[in-house]
Image (cartoon, rainbow, N blue to C red):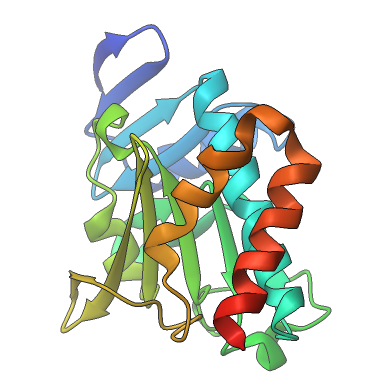
Length: 209
């Protein structure tokens, strides 16, 4: 096992077997701040910083508000640990949601990617701070859409032929200009969370009509 520490908030481990990965997840438990990603023997353990957590929560709530405003059924599963041994891939997104496949998982707490569909949408915050490339991980897990927020910009990626291609529109919210969402958030950030939520709902309502 080789260890490389790049910053105080991140540790990279190399040559990690799948069993070691599973053992580490068990030892760390679920009540932890650290987020984990595993890609074919390379493991990253990352402790999020306050700015990261702010946008993770704020954009996640915005997705909730937009879905409710558009009357879309959905499930939010947060930073669930998604993994498949056959693909040597595992990741804990900053947030994830079911929309198109919500009927297949509604009310269930025993999801298994060997037999259940992956989340329809995953959210990643500040990819530039993460040493391990998460795109191949999500691709091998089969997540159809990624939203990546970094430095005030929200990029959308669709999975096509095993690779992520940047897109202008969301598969989940095809009629909304989702890339404008950070602007709505920043315009209301100083006014507080309730102001942001009201602004996001109004923004979604206007585009819907």
